[in-house]
Image (cartoon, rainbow, N blue to C red):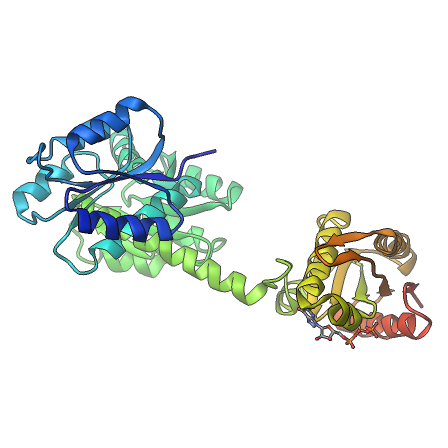
Length: 407
Ligand SMILES: Nc1nc2c(ncn2[C@@H]2O[C@H](COP(=O)(O)OP(=O)(O)OP(=O)(O)O)[C@@H](O)[C@H]2O)c(=O)[nH]1
């Protein structure tokens, strides 16, 4: 399992304790050192594998940043914290392959540092595509992005990039040049936006072009940001981080709007937004836990929640690839390809029986419950099918529950 341990190096003990508390509160274990000697001793022991290092640039036995190359030689991503905000130190630090440079004199320094630690933790799962016809530039951008642990993919021209993006919906950021043989960066960006929204992918245009309209051209084509070459590393990382965070925030908002937080299943809104577009012949099953109020009353709401999660898990396991949603309360809906109600009946009957036979161990004793299910198929309209399945669900309830009703 990858480590999430942080090596925290700081000679001011009150700053050290504050930083340690902030980082540990975020769930990252911390190993502390106050001098270069201690750092060397910790690294020599080889007992710890560090995800990142937060390093005070000046230490009593290393007043001129002598600790930095020692930590970097171990390939530990390093965020340098320093009280020195002079240009010379800044340039010296940034010439080395550090994650970032944070002047301690800003009130937001600690907050910024923890934000960078979180990024280092998340970035290894984030794919970035670099598009440039120059192998040298691609290599340069790759090594910069690797400092922040992003997973980097490369394309030497626009059509290759478009193919890679179509094949891989997990790419979250594109960095693209403009002047390339074949298709230009701006044209490629407009083509990407036909199949990848801003919510799925951020795009940063990068160019050495003297054309003052280049920023606007990239952004009007669908890019989110633009960097002029040559750029400085700090600006590069600020923009990359900001754009990755923007996509992540949009995706989190979309998840919150479309996902039931208790079961992780899509909610009613997602179901209507996506399923109403279906054109295949399909069937709908409406599934409801019997006497669920009684489960809550007897076992408590937390066990009621557990029952809902178990039903969601069983639905996911027994109906992989089908549209499943928690419709509200103790009611779930499954939409599956089906030409007739008989197509769905056998699967729903198996599901009903498996839940009726199951015993769910809980902290307050064994829990058993049953399901009533209404099934409808054969109409081209999902809303009409849902209404029919709902009527049949109530038929199942009125006939004694623990059964599947069709027409
Ligand atoms: N624990 C828990 N209970 C919920 C949740 N959402 C709704 N409920 C409860 O689910 C219960 C549903 O009760 P009823 O609609 O009377 O239905 P029932 O008891 O299942 O009876 P029948 O459907 O007629 O078999 C209510 O008591 C709600 O408070 C939830 O997210 N968690």
